Image (cartoon, rainbow, N blue to C red; front, top):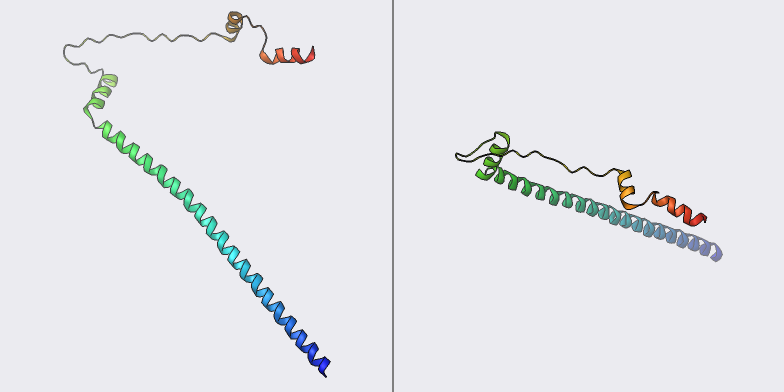
Length: 128
């Protein structure tokens, strides 16, 4: 009989050990999940805070622009540009815009003395 009680005691001790180990593993899993969820939330909050900061910067820039658009200097500048506003006694002189043309690729090659592209020189270097 004593062997039978030892078997029952060992069986019950093994069962309780299994239950305790399962509980500990479950607790670690729950704690890990909570920590991961908190990490994800903090990352999301950081992104939202950056968005808030950029929106605050945009708001301050827009407020600055509104203040500038209300000034007499801006109003006069727009009136001169769009409405051809001239103060009494001023003379307006129109100067034609003559952009400097950029040299074509062929002109660049002729002016610098280079007849081939850079990669062609590299191919010649490695093949010879």
